[in-house]
Length: 402
Image (tube, rainbow, N blue to C red; front, side, top):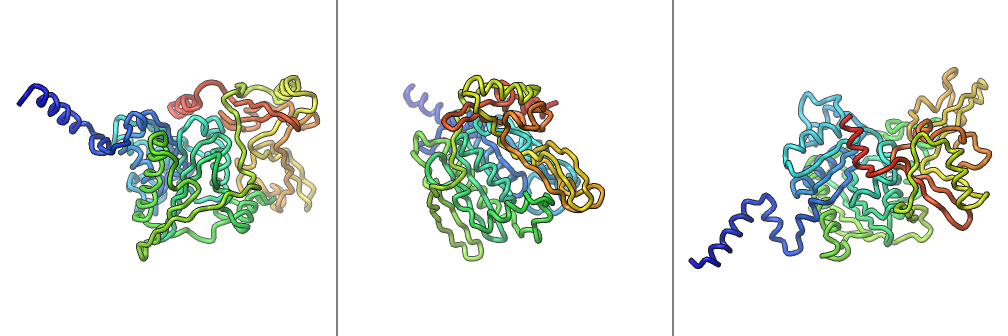
């Protein structure tokens, strides 16, 4: 055998010992691109387990997992990483802990809590793709809006029984998740904002039936679409952008549905966060408003990404109390009078002007999430602020480690 042939054989043998050798044989595959990628997985249930498993196996370099729930016994039949004895532990923490054993090349970070509280818009801007394994229209809508504002692709998954779907939304073009929502979907989202602040359990009439097999199929398609999105420079636009892969397990039929873009959709907004000014969490909103007015004019106001509940009042017994927290942070009990149990009448605000009762509060006191955006605007222009400095992923990892 010639020296050249021996050298070529040595390269082949070396490649065969690389854990990514088989997938790297795909002509357009770029393992370094996957190694450098950051993917946020929202939801750590049946879909979330399969999403993380696949991301880790293909070698996506950084995977963040956000979930607010604890493991229940019923999760054990549908979640590959959960074990007997895990009940009561945070889903995100257990999923990250177990998935880390699959591939030492991957950095995994658990974000325990509601995604609306754990990371703001700058977090969505810092990742390459967001994968959803959610059971809440309200949170899906929030994730969709964050992705659209930061131009981050969103691959949503849903399963019920032997049926499932994987939908791909790629801003700024095409349809987004809100474009697909029906009038009934909007009614269910609005129900959470009622004076009683209905909890998720109040809105569900029963548990949605799911299986591990359907979760595996849908999550596989989701991660496959994410891989294609990460290779968009080589492959071109995703074939599923603005569309859904629908799977009918009873008959094994599958088909693609394409969604029309709604020009009046309220989610179609994009923020220029690259030029945003960092703001310390201890900054009073009065100081921030003054800066905005100095930059944009005396008519500038601040707009928050989350609605704040200013306070509640009871029509039955006359009790009143300040609340001053984001609406998503309140439980069902917080929507009722502590004296008589009747529903509160709640006062909301998401803009701040010279007469706002929020001016003397700091960003931290109001419970706004780290890395969230605050927009200063006039009728003709706007300026962006981001809470905190530096890479939001590094800050979140530091908080998780602490």
